[in-house]
Length: 186
Image (cartoon, rainbow, N blue to C red; front, side):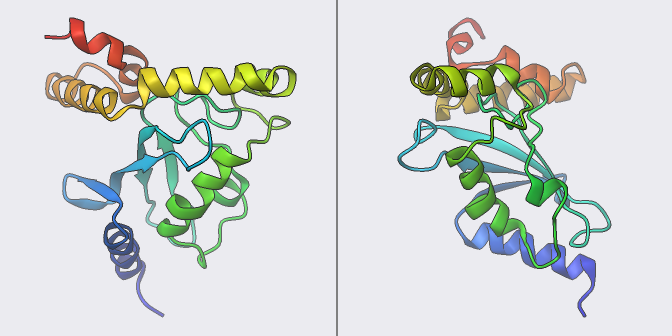
């Protein structure tokens, strides 16, 4: 059996080779960001999210920690922290899965098939069950405000500035910086 370190290197490299935009934190494969595009034929289709992935020393036997940095409107994703409620990541993770499964299968399926009966975002769950068309409109509004490539660039720039100043957390930045705030940020 190969070592966990070798498995981590292999999984991160597979992610990069599959044309995912991966940015390592401090050249360390234990923590990185992936630009995740919304699945086709969904209200998320035009969105681009920065997803933080952190691996524990127990990977692949322990699941990675996954969180959206920029805001997303979804019943199973906490709007403020970006935490994801997904059984396959949180409870039923297996070493048979790898990082490619998360970004090519698990997250796209989560966005395509939300579970409003087990929400992290009660407002999204309620809107999906009561007013599905308004739910879709709110997703599209969030995509325009927080998940365009331009909004992501603004958030990344501000995250770099904040980290150099040691002042803001990523969750604060996801709330503060949308594409609309880029014009007032100089």
